[in-house]
Image (cartoon, one colour):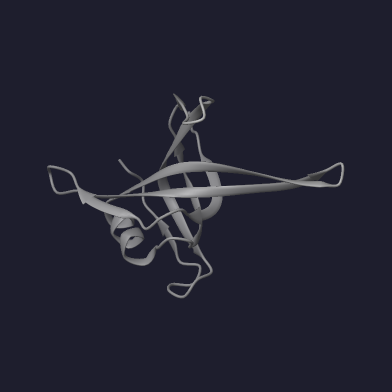
Length: 120
């Protein structure tokens, strides 16, 4: 069996790097994926947020080069959505993606650099 999800979006804030008890680097960042459409002459927009986690060398590189607003393509494994109730009382789902590949799109530092790493 194989499952892969690919998303393209912008970082919502700077990545956060930390280390496991055994010293393995892990970096997390939020990714906003925007969808826009027009219906009956009215423009609509929907933003879907993903919590992305990168491990090992990929974690180090993401922490070093990514920053808020940067566009990236992330390919990885999507965990089962976790439901929660938002501040407005509406039910939502937390979407968590473990990155296998991160492509930097645009920006100042490494142009279209592709990094591959499996988390296992």
